[in-house]
Length: 432
Image (cartoon, rainbow, N blue to C red; front, side, top):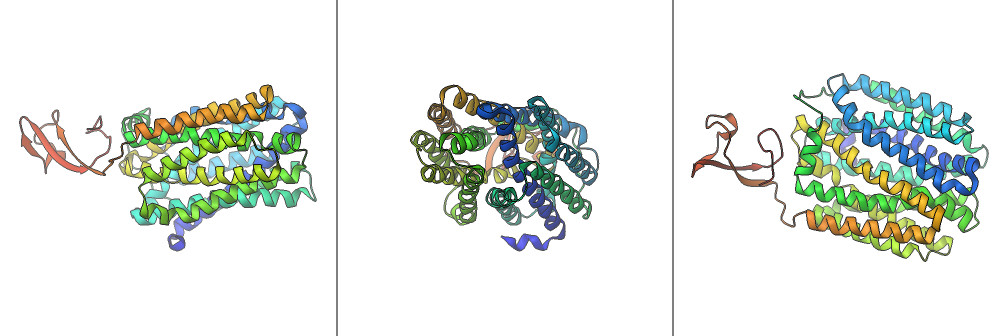
């Protein structure tokens, strides 16, 4: 897996991802404690609203930013967005009102919404070989999981000597280091496209496997929202534990995700993406129902570890599916579509988790989110075909017989038939 780090460009980009994720992890812990400091018993509602604002920025900004920025030099755009995130993170320690939190979270996440799809779409261009890309995806997921494990532990250690406000400064340093690493390498240029508006979303929703993936995103969002929104309330108010136990609970969630990521490459050699992803989604739905009976810290830690593992198994193969489902020129638009659509699921689940927990208690929140997760798991199984080959034989009726795309096609009954790796694009507007 680490062999892909021999490529200098990818090595620096991966390093940028790691340091930015570390800063983001510190901000996750600090934001929860900031919300608790400002709102007290209303922490869940405040944090749920803040995370909903984050999702609004993701859903609304990603496709627009892709359309506006795709023609600009990638490296310059990525560095500029990192610097915006540095500035916002540096201001967060000084806020004292809920509305200030909301405004700064929107600005921070709008920059991330522009940065992330462009960054993700760059990796397949840096590593065009499919095996290398698969290793890179697994390594990327491992970085996410290590962040979930180490950042809370780092935050817990830091909280022993500083207040949570200083954690935001660590976030700013992480984004600054990311900018330095990105600027140190030559990033491949974007391939030109005629349009970027809704093209990625059209590809996404016209591809059966991606429609199933979107339903899986809903299940993962339901489970993950309970972790990210309600861990502070569950640990501090429900179980009467201190801030360090909040960090421990989040670290356990990251540990479960890390273990799953490490075993995933061997699992994917034995099972198809669909089998791994759909079964993980079913497990996540079941865990939420069990969460209604988590009456001790030990029980909560076990459930949080399983949620971490389930989300890792459910979501990590998604990048492989996106790469498989788009031509290189369409990847930025498709990655932006996945970013926006998947975060639309979080936009629903984040406030739902916070508001239901605040109004009706954690037990009810677990049950409600369990229903949402179950709906996503069932929908994924129904939408994602069991037989999902890469190469599909199909017909063309509207192309000119001399069109270059038909060079290997065979005429039959007034149509042209051939087979190749099928993707929705300018020549294939619907699935066969």
